[in-house]
Length: 312
Image 1 (spheres, helix red, strand yellow):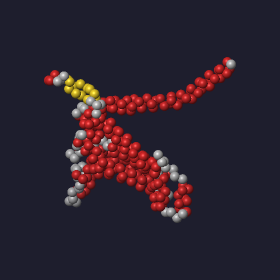
Image 2 (cartoon, rainbow, N blue to C red):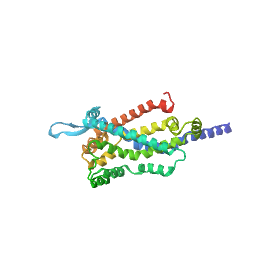
Image 3 (cartoon, rainbow, N blue to C red):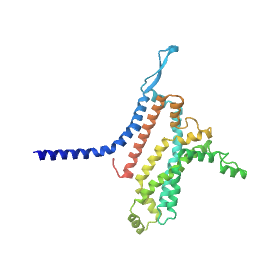
Image 4 (cartoon, rainbow, N blue to C red):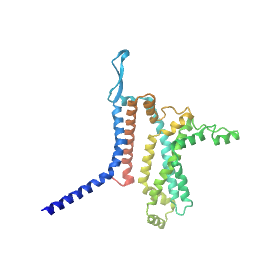
């Protein structure tokens, strides 16, 4: 009996070790997730239901934090500047998202052509702008946009012409979107190109034997098969659009056309650090995060059956 009992104890210890080993490896990531994501999100959600109210009345009233329910959310959704920021964001996204994905797919298809020359150099050159920090890229393009520092405007003035003002009027949205396109095409191109390289070459050979040229192969084989990667890159581009902040904030000192509340995140920053209204900023942040989550889920539900072959 003692041998049986000892063997059972050893088996039990081994089972516990096997069960606990994965959780032990996951523990550092779980701690980082809780410390830097779950707790801040929970605290922001808590703050969104709180607010400063004057208590005591009269000249000696004191501001005290108290429970205000959904008042902050009502204030956020009735703020005309916050809502107008979403309209500007929509115009920006209509320009940036299709062009980013279209150029990324075009470059990926061109680099995947057989016997293409300079593929390695081209991949590096297209991807390189993604490695440039966002603030640096915005400053670079900002100086190229300014009439006083733009080489293009200097050349036009030298022949007696006047260049367009890239930071005002109808050129403002394309100018801001161009920075994101320039930076994001390389990253999305790498994802799509990697997906293309994963397609078996036998598929292409069979198509060529049937008389298909490279255009037919790209349109009828490559693009449908990289559908999941297109959905992924589209989701990244959409989330990036909803979180636009760095480009307009960096360009703001260069033009009067970009206000302090040009996009929703700039409004949230103003409420939190200029007006010292953390509760309203928290409510706006939660609303923006939930909106991003809903849009992402809807996009995946709409596209998953066609791109991933799933029915639900």
